[in-house]
Image (cartoon, rainbow, N blue to C red; front, top):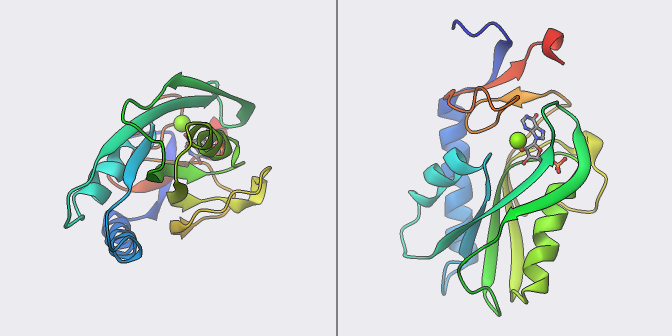
Length: 178
Ligand code: IMP
Ligand code: MG
């Protein structure tokens, strides 16, 4: 690996792929009648969402929300901004939010609130990674791939300063970068 800023692999692509399959099967079981409208939170969820939806055996709709809370650093600014809303109707529908990682929970809480204001019938949350050590809100994902320690991770859609989203495994960012 030639990227100087990243160190060890925390989660290998094979482990991620297994977790994604497990979550997809659980979601299919939990929504026996009709799969929910899946709403990915951009940009971080784009690779996870792409893998998750390709495990589904039944048709369903998907949409995206674009939120931002981070400046260019590694700490949440605490202010979440809506940059792009959904385009599919949400009212009275089951919605599943798809997130890369829940850290403070502020982004997710904002997204849940946004969908509730649009009168979604139900809102559940699927997060590939859960980093509970800095939680500032009550959110708890309904589906979790991995609970991880308090480390800043990149790869598989997750960035540091818009870099490293393309990496197939999830790595820890080197201390010197923080
Ligand atoms: P929260 O609002 O603090 O829960 O943060 C959620 C967002 O922060 C995620 O959607 C990510 O985009 C970003 N984030 C939080 N922790 C990390 C990390 O370890 N690596 C990369 N992005 C992160
Ligand atoms: Mg991010």
